[in-house]
Image (cartoon, rainbow, N blue to C red; front, side, top):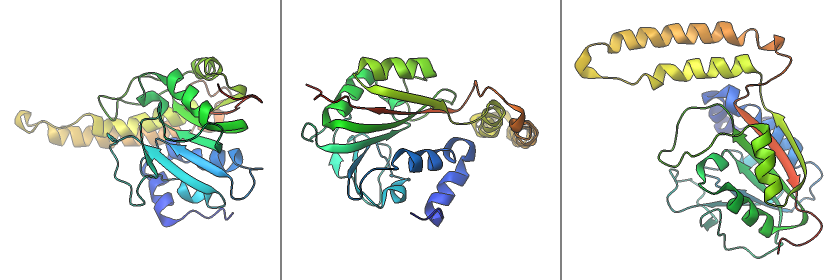
Length: 237
């Protein structure tokens, strides 16, 4: 698999590099050792921006009918993540990136992911700790490493391995950059020019904060956590 990203994926990553760039090496590493042609299911895939990272596999996608996205490739299965039209023990690996914050009952969804995974199958997850409200009204949770481990274990997963995906200054910088848009606009108050100037100031501050990221030894405030886990060597039922 080439390390070179397509222009489409490179552009997607560049829109929010602190949040998205760490996904690329994580996802590449998470599927290492999977046999070519293995069935990889991307749950809540949206526009499936990381599709090319799974080109060696039988890659399929699911999303629910109320998705915010209309992917150019279409969706293989239109269904909610807690009730998918797949057989038990039929999938070699499940990928679920930045989805668990959008489901009201995450354990119920994770139990369903375990159901479709074969015994020993691989779960590959990312979930945010620090981000603004989005895809409203379906934005329910943020996850610490301990909360993510809790819901994965409660759903019956084993060999759970969780890591922060970026340093804290990078998180703060990313939020400062997003804050310029989060200020919104209000044409009636005559202050939009000041909002634009404030946004420029926030971007300058972001650059300064991001420059000290290499000093962070703890990574206690990442944007997201990554997790891998396995379906134990018995069926989910």
